[in-house]
Length: 172
Image (cartoon, rainbow, N blue to C red; front, side, top):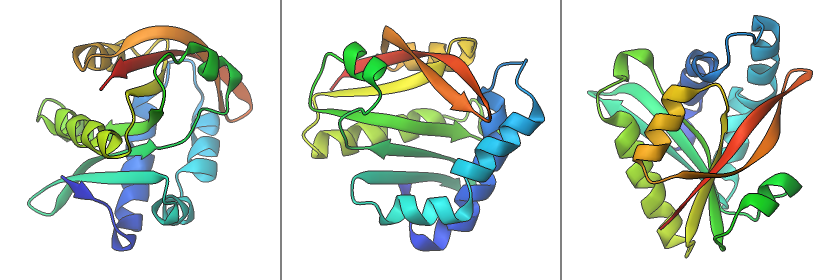
């Protein structure tokens, strides 16, 4: 587990493209998934994320092979639904946490989570929040085991259609 660097942008974009669909509900079309990847998870976007001092991108690896990544954002939520649901401030968003299918059950997600929570503490946050699709029960179970509880709902745009997410939060 380590902070990602500029030399990791290709790896991050590949892992992001390979894992995003795993978190999507069954009704989501490949066109919408591809539109999201093309708008949010491209190499150039990861370059921007790594240059943004309010973000931390973490990379999980084993023997030099990528297993997954996480991205956190130290900023007040701009979405009014999220802002209303969050009780703990200052807060950090766990924006992304994904592991490749071959890494499921390896402990990589737990290590990414722990490293992300540690970083949030260095930012003097007292809470961490995330959005998760309401149909993604596997992720919800993982977040609940990590101490997150549902505090509200929000909408999440993928392609040209909104999805319904739970807003989950945990204290640090």
